[in-house]
Amino acid sequence: MSGAGPVRCVELHDATPPQSIRDAAEGTRFAAACYPAAEVRAALADFAERRSFALQLSFGGLALLRDERIAARVESLALGGAELDSIALPPRLRALRLSGGGGSLDALLSLPLEILAIDRGAFDTAPLVAHPTLAVLSVANLPAAALAVGARLRAIRTSGVPLRTLESLRSGSALERVECSRCDALESIDALAALPMLRELALEGCWRLDLQATIAFLQQLPLQALRIDIGGRRKNVEVDKRLQLARLAPFPTPEAQRMLLTTGDEPA
Image 1 (cartoon, helix red, strand yellow):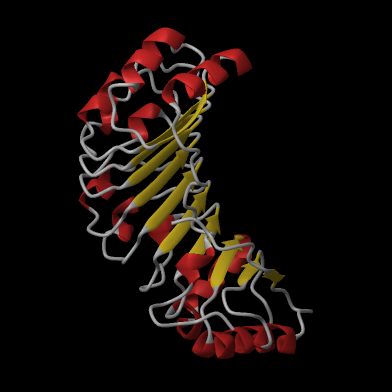
Image 2: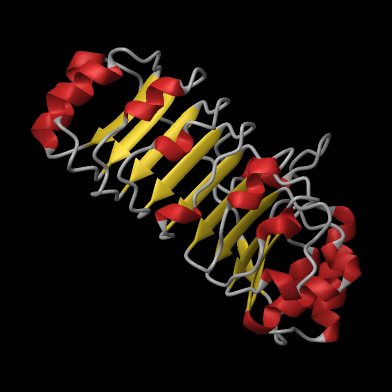
């Protein structure tokens, strides 16, 4: 589920040579903070007819979603400061990153979304519990009360979410991977025992967890891979030595190149 490599990014503005867009490689990410000139939009629409791509939009660049020639083919999208209640999201969207902004996430329920990352903003993930295809959720810098987990979710990452316990994960009966970082409020991970599919775990910056109690608890779980940082190098080495588990692969992200290829496509 991790990416295959770095994705080239092309900035879209009035001075962008249209041919540089048409000649871009499969999986290129196009970024726009303004509404580019008509010839630039036409070049992007032409590219969209032939190859998979991603969009990274903020400010005036959000207006690109009003162009049906482009929006109809977007599968990977990053939005900065967007109000979801006032825009129409691409109908084929499979991967989405939200940075700031707000609005109801109900608009995502009708999309074939697989990966969602949220960093900041006025969002509540409760509507996503009912999402039929969402498999990976990453949430950063939101209140603990904004976190909700659906029964179909396979991987979740929280960063800077002030959780005291992981009780909100108990509903994630399909969770195979859990990551919790920058959570110095976390006092208990007992709820992980209620996740029958859990095989991969990361705990980083969780300074309140007791070393010996954590080792004893993790030894009871059917884990296959682990990344841990709960209070200094000595503690981390001791956990690794006692548990002898594989290292975790990178967490799946909306920018993963795999997400930019439709079924049957091959990279150019």
